Length: 393
Image 1 (cartoon, rainbow, N blue to C red):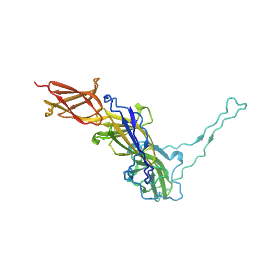
Image 2 (cartoon, rainbow, N blue to C red):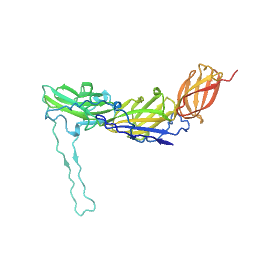
Image 3 (cartoon, rainbow, N blue to C red):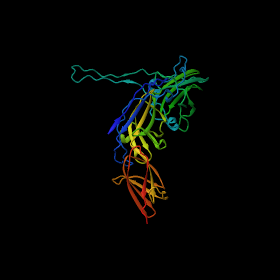
Image 4 (cartoon, rainbow, N blue to C red):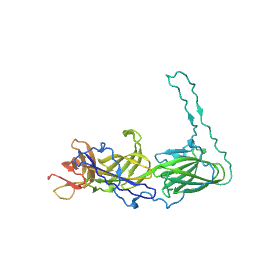
């Protein structure tokens, strides 16, 4: 059984339209899950957020810094060959290997319908080609770069990574990188020529081909169509979890469930991730055993989405003792199984602490050649010790 609890309020910030919050609850009565079969709580439904203070906005936008101005000179190639958008960050080697290819738009010939009395000869019409400007060597071409979350947003003043490559490949088959800078808006002096400019903002990025035909001032804007995602989790009943044990993996939602691409691994609780607008699949892990939940979330350009996932889980500490409340015996080998005999977790030590999904389990403790066991249950949000009593000789 899945229940949803939400409250909504609008948050007005400079550049961020509003913040969204998702809160997912599930029944406390669930069977133990094996590590390879995480609990699937289905699609997370998106609602507006609980009233969060403006100070929690995920990106600090500038105070009204204007976009860079340029002279009335064309700065880039035609639309068909200036821009290549990507949905995941690229390594420097991948960017260096990029070679934009120009394409000519064509109008497809239309065929007459079969039942028409007259026949029409099909013709094709080519769009007029635009000749790339000649490069005039000499002097300095000053290029101003600015990036925006949305078409109508303010220029980003931090968090950007700019990389500029010469379009012509070197002897090693890669495009030489002429500039690599972090921050916000950028102004850089270059020789007239053809360049590839990469604008990276977290896991959102955009690549453009820019032509600087002669000395002068130029500008280029990058509309990233990006938003933010903040992830967190609690136990059922709004009980805090140990954030040190929480991790999130973010996957693309473009392919089949078994063929989704991992975009951002091992994300910590409350860490803000910058992503291209789209739908993503989130897997939350509490510990490294079987406490997992998953769901889908939509990221919109210019918005911060806050997702709170609800775990039916708790921490338990295993202790092999000679008497109730006694000292834990060292060098104990532990095995935790589901009632069906599936392996959940192995551990070694006097008192290992595990995060487990709510359900029934069997703990097996091996001390030397002796083996002891105990059945126990895990209730969501209830952290406790599980003592296994060693038989007296």
